[in-house]
Amino acid sequence: MKIYSRDVQFEFFRLRFQFSVLDPIQFPAGKSGNMLRGAFGNLLRDAGCRCGTRSHSSYCRYARIFEPAAAENAGPSGLKTWPRPFVFRTHDLDGRRFEAGQPFSFDIHLFQVENPPVNAICEALETFATKGVGPGHGRAALLSMEQLGVSIPLAADPQPCFTARVRFLTPTELKCGEQLAPKPEFRVLFARIRDRVSTLRALYGPGPLDLDFRGMGERSAGIEMTRCDLQHVDARRRSSRTGQVHPLGGFIGEAEYRGELAEFLPFLRAARWTGIGRQTVWGKGEIEVV
Image (cartoon, rainbow, N blue to C red; front, side, top):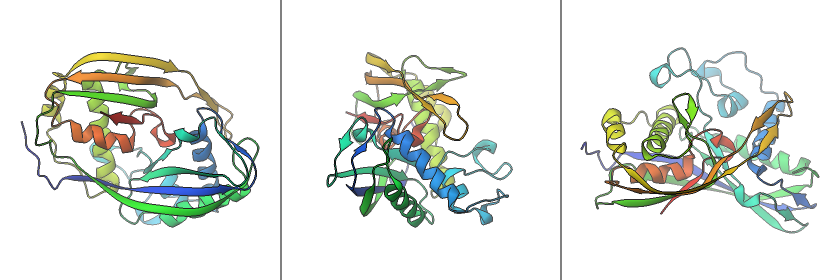
């Protein structure tokens, strides 16, 4: 087993936004993250940010945050489409109603640690709140923003670990080849986590991880799933821009694993913050490791 330096980290910012409700606000069930993400992107775009180029030196606020793209063969393995450098954490708001005077909050995890666009994000969310939130367009006031730097060690845990439980808190979809995996077998789960954490760090952090990708993948296949208690959530969204309907569903629940897990646990912990699978930007694929 390859041993990694203990100073290898995955770093990002947790931004917590606190609002005070001015008019009653209703958040749609299962769609608060998508609603906030869509409004956030529209406000950045409407701010007059129009870029006709994809070069790094000329990124505007909207393109830099919402439509990052790689120059020719600039990304890992020639990656042309970059994952967005943030995710929303809003599932505690799903289906809830807030009356005037009540507070609500949500988090954004920002993976762009070099010149993070925190001011642009704050300005967009402040404008969004004053224009109105949710189906009824209830207004809110941004009270505060807390910025916390988080650093997660990616070295193998020093103590052996042979069992772990993963809770899938929001709908999760994992690709396995060209198909969606019906169950989160550990080799598939770890492959999607490894790829996402490594790509985010390479694009927005200090650089690529020096990982034995093949060896870790082979060892992950030896981790056994001992229990799988999942249920499927069916949800859809309609794009305000194109009118197209897109699925938002996936599985939630728990899975338990057994095997030599110490080298994989740091990546599972990192995935709590990054999300895994499809449509992570608006909160899908949020997990918790027990």
